Image (cartoon, rainbow, N blue to C red; front, side, top):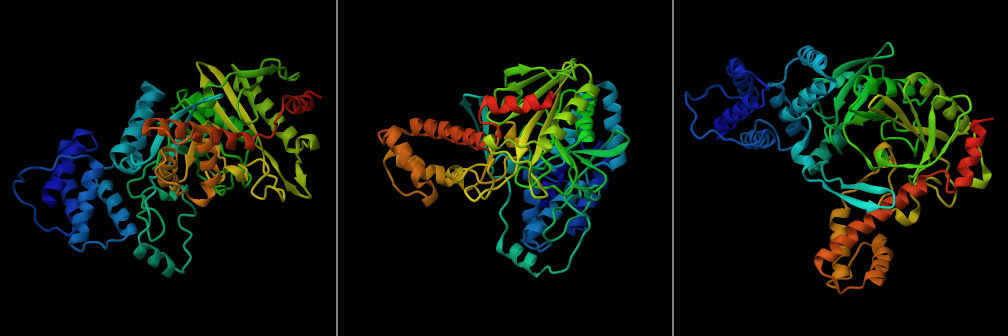
Length: 492
């Protein structure tokens, strides 16, 4: 069957234009070398026609059965990436094609690169398909909820290997460094042989565009600095974000905050996230508008959103950058004890911003989400972080993606929600201890004389409410008057 899988993969690669007909024998020979094959039949009957990810999985199974590799997670990942690297052009060729298509339109360029990243199996479509995703109507608009099931579990042999690995290896320095492009991978470090990035110069610096292997939304991309340096929110960050939307007007782009608790999972490498997707936050309407006395060309407002967000709009990037920087500098030093906001504890800073930029038909827009990472004895994980009563749903940081209205919830919820559903159907009372109070509340509110469809609808709706609560907890201003005190400070 291996010959049928190889020929099927080559035919599929031809179909999606990963390779040209003239490349077939070259690619076949490279695949044979990876699999230890010395011969190939003159004719292959019943070519296996399947998706590229499925064909790669079948080839990996063959490699395990024939002892080409061990049945260990990293061996499988490395071989899978090397298989697809046989079909992927060199980085210079990919960048040249991107630049040529950009001359037609930015959309044509990103379409090319996104399709390449899917077809070469860098974007893990089979794993992403395992995620449970749905939308929930809330008072702030329609939120996106995802129970993340795409990350593969490590097998016992993989865990044993990682335990034995004692030596330090600092190449690449992190998962976002440019050195990952084409890197084969190793134990406890992902395979990137089929990984390609696009050069995007920004403000005289080298930046690079790639897609996330586990996309949470359409064209979920990452823009990262060539220099391995810590994330920093400041004037240059605002200018980069807005300039990027000028280059790629169909993409939004934003940054995680640059402090622990309110920041992202990788604070050690300067990077942003973007994509071609409209979040609930994008659709949020103005709650109230206000003037910025030093920036009359800017339309400023506070939007109707569970977190504390200032939205700035203008036809020109320059005043937006200046105004955003002024808001950031004022916020970094701002304290309001009535609102439980302290800018510092001794020399430790607490205030920063999560920024998101867009280009709406030539009107540049930047949302500035005010963040504070202070902890207290009552809220040791963060005062402006999901509180203990919602930790049974989400305990992790509220990062950029959640800020915009997409909940990324832990995989444990898949089974746990089923258990709670049984409570609502009256067929069981067994739930995880940390869900017991919630299950009691739902049972008291809705009873147990429900059908499965009703129970499903209720649970989706209630999950949406819990997510909104997570965002409301993360909002620094709980009242309009507190927000207006800060706006007054901006206009002093």
